[in-house]
Image (cartoon, helix red, strand yellow):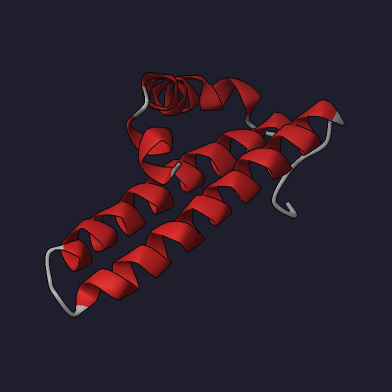
Length: 95
């Protein structure tokens, strides 16, 4: 889930679009959604890099498997929470 999220074409296009358009939504409730998506993308990328480093060590393999499951659940949570807030027309992330 996490790898497809970060390296999928829709996610890459979305994060680029977020950076390009974020000045247009500054000061609105949509600003929190742009920030939420950008942070989700970058945090997922960082944790995927940690996962890939761990997977190549014998001791790190069990930790890597636990990490990737937790990361997948976290990404799903972020996507669902963001969509629900967007559907209700409210900001996301407690901002």
